Length: 162
Image (cartoon, rainbow, N blue to C red):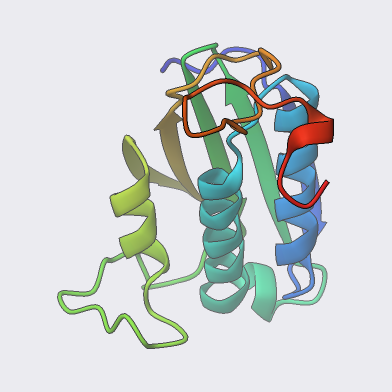
């Protein structure tokens, strides 16, 4: 995907509380744009913002920030997460990932759940980006997935728990 005009962008403080804000911001943008499948994208945004806060000057320096840009070309969604950089650390995926660990899996998840990803660096900071190919159509077709055993769509009154 060649980024054009972003669907949206935001600058957040380099604090751990910004992880939740970033996820909510991206979810809101994508839902407003008609995307229903946002879970993986929200997860990856949360991981990258957490990494930016933990491993860069964004979270180490007073006034540090993390910037997000979100693009949607109709087939793929791309997210750029830009931090304030840091000397000597570059994004690396660990050779071994402990599935029960509470940390150390962020870039591994990005690699596993995205179509493609990468990073760039300049004197102002580092940008880690990812793209996710969207399997479902961009706009809501009204099919919420509730079906009976015959495969017929259930209206709201006939759904389990309704």
